[in-house]
Length: 299
Image (cartoon, rainbow, N blue to C red):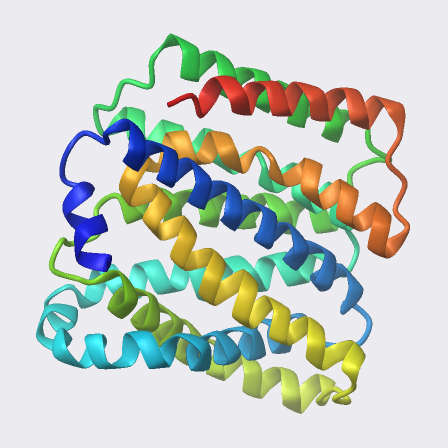
């Protein structure tokens, strides 16, 4: 399956492959929406760095049965492309999620999702710099969805310091997604995922040690362990696999258009789980976002 998908990425996506890519991007987006809610829910019980460290440790265990053996077989290729793998690990694993958790200390989950939905603009900019031509329809969809995001942010309850952390996280994720299009063909999907999780968790070790020393650990309860299992298995192992394949099939710009669904999903989840309010103005802006996704992700 991995080999077939990787061969497909080297050619122009046929409609079936493009549809699969859009579906995988939507799956990752919906699953990731829950991680913003869990980050916000854990903000007063698990320190941000410890949230990130345990998330990736759980994710590493989850992908090990599928990726460890492939990573060992491809260890020479991994060494040859160590710089690429380390950069992807740093942006997509170590820094990105830690910034999201830090933002969750002060920023409501719905606002986190709104700001993160701006990252596809950076994805499209990187693809455009690489010579890609997104087309009029996709550009219109991107602008429409981005406009909905800006209206959501502009109509919010004010700008908090946590929003700055989210802007930095959006930049990291956009850069990571654009970087995926340059993934060496000889690196298998499972091996790449396992290796980035391994390197990302290892890069977090010094910060984890400092956090334990300064802030202390957290008490394992169902309210802390279950959310960490969710972000480790679903939001990391499953969602990152789906997103990486989506990028390979349809590119960062088109997958990024689907990513604009995230503020809609996060707002609904934060309303249902955390009781955060969703008003008529937000609903109108979400309609703009959905319309932009339909245009921008058209097969």
